[in-house]
Amino acid sequence: MKAASVRQRDFCKKVGSGVYTPQVIVNGEVTRGGTSAKVREEIAREPEVLVKLDRPRRDRKSGKVVVSFDVKGKVKDCTATVAITERGLKSEPDAGECKGMKIEHGNTVRAFAEKKLGREGSYDVELRCS
Image 1 (tube, rainbow, N blue to C red):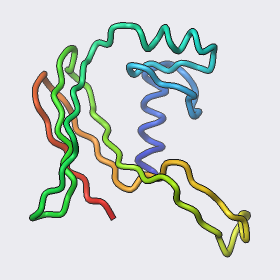
Image 2: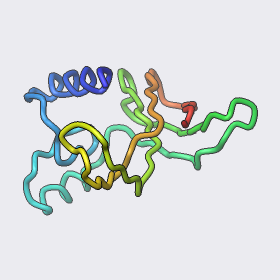
Image 3: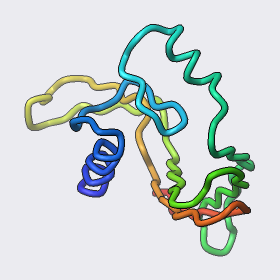
Image 4: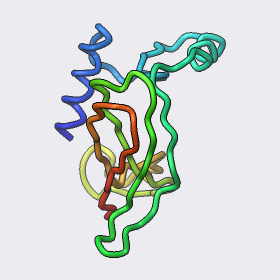
């Protein structure tokens, strides 16, 4: 997924680190491992941007899932990333290095979208689920 790689490289440039999969991201900041106490401390910090998410709804005409949210705070140059995931999927590949293995997948992304935010306010993101 090229877009995901580009996004990860851009994020790592922003925080001044090499490309890797972070253990935890809190308020847009990478928390590299550390203790549970450090993670709790990061979570307790007042965020610069507050997001109030509404329950997703399906648009009957288009069939898309619409996620609505309100944003307050230092919103300039922010991007909202929305993903719909599915749990409990299993597969048994018939080729490649995992051939014949039974694989249980954690959270599989079924739909993904980003929305550039320029100001405080209300936003909608539409996702087509397959």
